[in-house]
Amino acid sequence: MKIVMLGAGYVGLVSGACFAEFGVQVTCVDPDEGKIKRLHDGVIPIFEPGLDELVAKNVAAERLSFATSLSKCAPKVDAVFIAVGTPTRRGDGHADLTYVYQAARDIAAYLTSDHFTVVVTKSTVPIGTGREVERIIREANPAARFAVASNPEFLREGSAIGDFMRPDRVVFGTNSEEAAEVMKSLYRPLYLLETPIVQTTLESSELTKYAGNAFLATKITFINEMADLCEKVGANVQDVARGIGLDGRIGKKFLHAGPGYGGSCFPKDTLALVKTAQAVGAPVSLVETVVAVNDKRKKAMAQRVIAAAGGDVKGKKVAVLGVSFKPNTDDMRDSVALDVIPALQKAGAVVQAFDPVAMKEASKLLPEVHWMKDTYDALQGASVAVILTEWNEFRSIDFDRAKQLMAVPVLVDLRNIYKPDEVEKQGFAYSSIGRGKISG
Image 1 (spheres, helix red, strand yellow):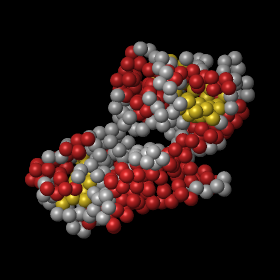
Image 2 (cartoon, one colour):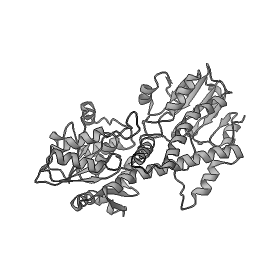
Image 3 (cartoon, helix red, strand yellow):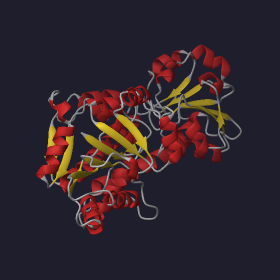
Image 4 (cartoon, one colour):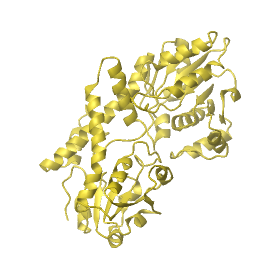
């Protein structure tokens, strides 16, 4: 089979490389000439564990290639996947579908009357987008023989390849049986793993993606509010999370208290769902509350750091450990660091930070930060250290060395990766989420 992945960003590149691994002939198309040149040179534009090896393997096998336009692709492909950005639209919170609709117009020019092609929306799009993509193509090329399908991605940054190769499920929606057969053929290797394949209508598939992310965001926000309650009543949120997570109806995933959710999906998708629901007269009040509570929580995290530093950070050095929104990625989109660091700087702190991967991206957004070479360089002279991202290397800090380097031994652990008593035995004042107040 032959497919085109329109967009060589995170979703398009990972999905394209994985389909190539399945034996599909894949061309990733992106108008960014610099990005395509780097890919031809073997340089991966994003950080994702294992992606560089997977891309190199399938390029060498001539199953994966790159181009700057559809005109350079092999004609008469079985499917064209739209995997372009759908950022939040400025001003109103809706998903910006400019790139999706432009992709539809571009695709229309290359469809023919003598070959059937499935046009697949892989990007996360609001309900009704697939219908509009179909309308655009039919208007531009009435003779085209095609059908539209929705195939949302469920890739977690940092473990995307495993998520594609061994997914919990595959969801696709279409009203065309011919398109459904193409989609089933593309995902046939997963049948061997007995992966559930959920076939729906276009609208149900589009909503499934938004509903799934909104539910997970709700779980995160719920356990964060329980953490706040734990701090008031003397309970331990990790015990509470384990106690409820062992209930099969609830499940243990996404019950880790922290500073609030961020990243490329949850903030954007929950807001887009809220706006879509409001537009059709079926408001989702629960999700609206989740969005508001999470935004407020991220903005409040800096105050925890300031409180741990004695209520004042003016002129003090603050060591920030981790700035990406989660480990194993360099993605800075809606990272809690983008709320915490500016607030600390506004309060007069001198922020010196280290992240194993994301500093290049972060420096574009946080130019006033002092970027350090490693964990201990960041701790030098600091009056308080704060863990914002739970990178593995922050799980084994040498506290004796850290104590010697820091001006004041204070650690604010916003990811709860340490046990309070163990850190306090090292002579540190320690603050975490939902497990008691600062002591020492």
